[in-house]
Length: 90
Image (tube, rainbow, N blue to C red; front, side, top):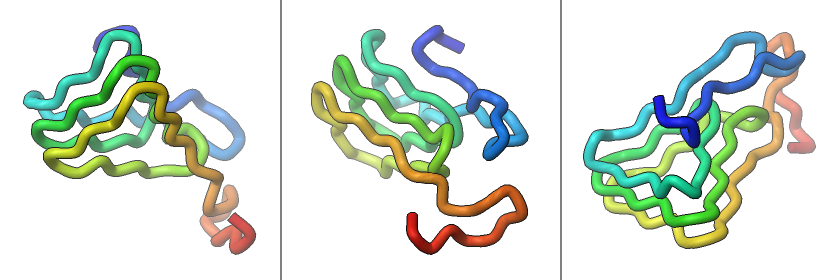
């Protein structure tokens, strides 16, 4: 796995490591980072300085033929507690 593609770190809200799933036709710029439970579809381009982090709020899906422009940050809030109950405020 390239060093800018990482598993979910183990935390109190993420008890298991999850790796991104990236289609072979997608392009992830070396200066972008993709962490955790992220699915990136076919023919997606992720530009420089993008951060896609599904290490708290997850999963994140980027569908086919999408383009994530320079400097975009995607990072969701945790939506379930450790017991799997929804956190309605998030």
